[in-house]
Length: 343
Image 1 (cartoon, rainbow, N blue to C red):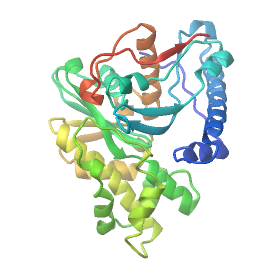
Image 2: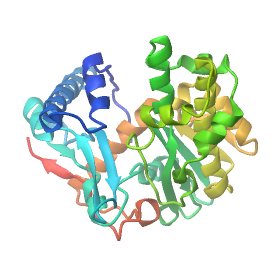
Image 3: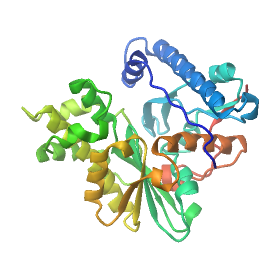
Image 4: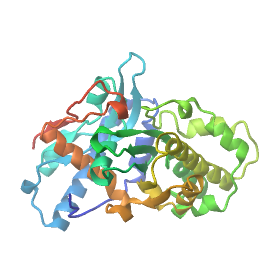
């Protein structure tokens, strides 16, 4: 695999707020979700055009776009035994705007097969970070955090699951109290003090004790959940809450590594959390026996890992190659994931 070009763009504040709002029930949400999906896809199409221009590649040379969409509800195995996972997307519109085949809806087939539908990236982690004869742990810290444990037998020995919150709670608290989208390098959290009683209350959540395979999302770990936990306390400074939220992410991720990746000597960190220096130091403090490092040091920059993973998954779909995710998602067997929308 080679990275020919990379591009990213911020979502508008209005679209960001709408996507976050759609994580919870609200008025006229079907209509709002459809329009939000259209708006999101127009951002995707702009980025595709940007990538083609930067790389000098014509759209006719591209086999497919892997477009995951924005998760707004994640309830696998809930309610009727099958449950659902919902990613806002309009792959038909993306195919129309770009003139390129689009592969989307990667998670629903896994859910239909009795799986969690997440995380899906561990199989990709194995392909790029796995080494024969070694156990390697890979941690993706996006809105949520997920851990992959790559065993020495490679393809036959991959485990993955969601640890819990990643950046979602920290980012929301930052936006609320200092008007910033995220805590750059974790500097605000580093200026605060971890409140042990609050940390214990945050960790007192059934999800953290569940065995793998498991997955989670903003359905559980959101601002309402945090407010309910904070109701038990008074007069905690916002900076100390931020320090404690950072420690929550570090603690939950480290607990997963200690339980399932204890044989590893390395923890490779990707996603936006890899740029949070304070969080990276806290992970290292929790895991002194491991070398905690950014995926940059292993050949793939942190913000490119998940994007590359869904390009890789799209290739699997186009080739009708199955993925066996039983140890990761709990699905009943190997399945072809994703749906193709021809240009």
